[in-house]
Image 1: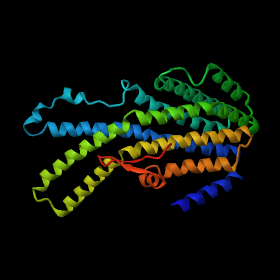
Image 2: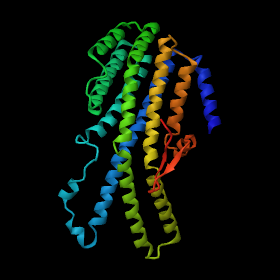
Image 3: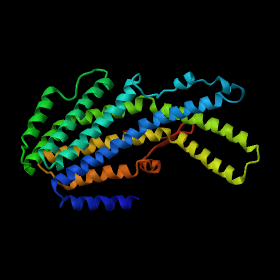
Image 4: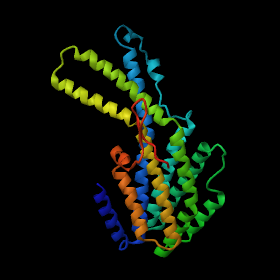
Length: 327
């Protein structure tokens, strides 16, 4: 697997020397967006695990003589755990999506072929920057904005300077100004998302829900197996229970994978900003950054990859694995 990764990095580095600047910027934006989509899935899994836990609880409670006690009103009480009441949890999700929207707008701006395309990309960029501000205020107890009004004014100015005739040099300079000015702010937001993923208790929520579902499913298996089910049925159920157990074991790794991904977004954006600041719009360093993002995307759901890179693997008294390396 490492050999494949090295080969892919070398290939990207070599093609990075021959591709156009817009191609590398587009690839960077698309890869970053793909990574934020993966991180989105963590919040989705928190919701889904909690809902599955509640569905399981209802199924275990309202059975037999108690089945008639289930009402439409009780069903209506089942709600998503991350909603407007859980502002910080929701803010992690929206802030991550805002970074993805920012990256995607850079990608669109890099290949825009008309004034209308540039205007659309810039509108999405403004929306992403506004979203970053809003969610940062929610997550940051000290309040305040990341992007100030002058940042928006500068962005408007540099994009307007591209003109109706799309000149590659003008577009590259606009992207350079946007990325360089945004880098410190993207880094701050990535750090806040990383911290909130660690402190929000999402991993505990996922563990609790998954463990409860596993317990109830095991009870159900024991009750049904007494009815002399076939070997094939028992084998299939054991496999399903094993997979549920693995989900419990990997509850913390799910969050740590998301943290690893958001840290790579931060590092890769810093690399892009540094290269653009030196007027390198297509370089080996940018190609390597894209390669790292793609590698994380391709192996995102592989907890084995995370553990192979981990120097200190821990298992708590509940059997939950985690990587205890220093950040």
